[in-house]
Every structure is written in C-alpha cells, then in structure tokens.
Length: 431
Image (cartoon, rainbow, N blue to C red):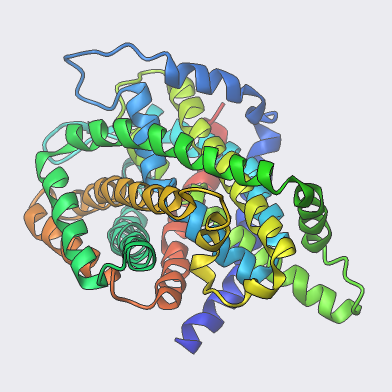
C-alpha cells in the first residue's frame, strides 16, 4: 500500500500532471478555445429526435451514458477526498482541469466518431483501440489500452462505486456492507444482461434526475450558509497557489498537494485524456463528428465545471464553519457531514444521490469494459466478463476506501499513455 502511494505521489505530482495539463492546454489553443461552443453542445444534446431503427446511442443517450460513467462518486466522494488530502486549493485545480479538459474531450471523441472501423462481426465501432489499431497501425498499444480498460472497469467503474454505496448505506440506513454489495450486484446484473439499449434507457432516466436533485441540495446548502460562501471562494483561490503565511517551504508543499489531488480527482471525474468518452461517441448514431464531439464535451462541462465546483464550495464552506468537526470524519464522508447540516432530509438527499450516481456509473463503466473485452477476445467469453464484473461489485463494497482510490489513480496511468499517444499522433486530424 505504501509503495503504491509513493508511485502515485510521484506520477501525479510531476510527469503525468505535466503531460495531462499540457495536452489540455494544447488542444484548448489549437482548437481556438473550443469551449466557447459549449452552449451549442448542450443544445445539440437536448434537441435529439428519436430514431426507432437506430443501432447506436442517441444524442441525449450518448450524453447521459458518458455522464453515467463519469458523474459518479468522483463528484461526491472524490472531491471530498481531494479537499481532505490536498486542501481547499484542490477544488480550483479540479475545476481548472475540467475547463481545459473539455478541449481534450472534444479532440478524442472527434477522432473516435470520425474514424470508425469494423469489429469482429463487421459492425462499425469507434474507440481509442480502433483508432490505434487501424488508423495508426499500433496494435500493441490498442491491446494495452483494451487491457487497461478492462482493469479500469473493475476498479474505477466497479470498486469505487460499490464502496461508496456500501459506505453510504451503512452510515445513513445502518445496512451491513456485504448485504448492500449483494443487492447492488443483483440490480446491476439485471440491467447488464439486457444489453446496450437497457444501459442507455437506464442512464437517460437516472442521470438527469439525480444530477438536478444533488445540484439542488448543494445550492440549498450554500444559500443557508451564505455567510461562508465568499470566504470559501477566497480560501480556495489562496490555497490553490500556496499563499500561506507559515513559510515558503510549507506553502510549496501545500501547493503540490493541492495540484496533485485536484488534477488527479479532476481526471477521475471527467476522464478527459483517458479516451473513454470516445467509446460511447464511437457507438453513437450521430454521423457528424464535430456535433458528437461537442455533445461529449458538454458532459465534461456538467460533470467537472459545474457539479464538482459546487460540491467543492460546499465542502470548503463546511470546513470554515465547522473546523472542529472536519477531522472527525473520513475523507470519503465529508460531503455527507456537510449535508447533515441541512435542516431537513440532508442525509437522505445525499444518500439517494450517491447511490443513484454510483449505480449509473456501474452500468456505464460496464459498457466501457465490455468494449475493451470484446476487442481483445473478439466477442468470446463475454459472460465471464459480466460475471467477474458483478463479483467485483461485491468485492469493492468491502474493500478499504484508501486502497480503492490508490488503485484507481495507478490504473489511470495505463489508460492515459495510449490515449495520450493517440491525441499527439492525430493532432492534425482534428478540426
């Protein structure tokens, strides 16, 4: 565990941070700040016309499925872990990663929509592994990405989410974690057996409802504790750049922690630079690559720029108002502690939001992992994959949270390297 922590600390405090932010800034510049078209992306995603004979995800379905895989505990548990370990400044770096990451999301989903190739059944598919294998002729990297995708599905998509559900149910409802894990695995299993269109329908129903529900709870908290809103903003900005009065050395250390956890959690929650959004974009029914890329980019906007930011504000406001309570809670339970201060149904609001988001992410990431597994084994053994995925849901519900997050940060590396290579090599193909 300590070795894994040291490796993550080195990678996410230096090399990967530079590469990640570098590619975000590069595409922001080279695409002439494509983020300015966010409202067009939102309009496209909401203005979908249903086609009964379509085989791919609809516009709105591609948005909600992408959000389902990203809009999970990264916005609730992940951001609280970032603030707990990296300080209030981590909120700023998480938000900044989201803003610049929107351009990277546009780039990778543009590629995966424009360059689609037939799979083992001669069905046209899109995704980083298809771009790597067919367009760039880098089959070894495509295999590496697909393996990492399967592993990520078991850790990013599985264990972190089921752990959050078990932890929340135990705190709020007093449910025994193994019982919660079994029930979660059963519910997700029923949805997965039905196939892709059930996944799409589930995310279209759950994701928008719960996002509005959770966002409303955060806004209510900030209204009721408005005296701490502007002090929280000030604390976030000053901590983000290490403006501390206790010495330059400690200030530098504080800045390093804020950047490390803010960027790492920002990456976890919107996954810009990992190429995963391209898996849904490449399976969409949208033919226009630019339109689909804007729709996918809007997912990063809602996920990190809006929800992570407002969650971070709630956490820092809570820390300023109740400093004596801050260290009484674990890193993953701080958002719950803040919501408990609401005058009515605070615990219940957050519990329902966490459970719904986590279930949606479990369903969305199962599709990601299945795409990687199908690429590796040409459609064989998918029952084994689904069975193991469901087993990992149970295992994740009883693992320690710290270990789960460290494994998540480490596995992100093996998704990032092939996706980064694709983005660099194909930089002249994106417009």
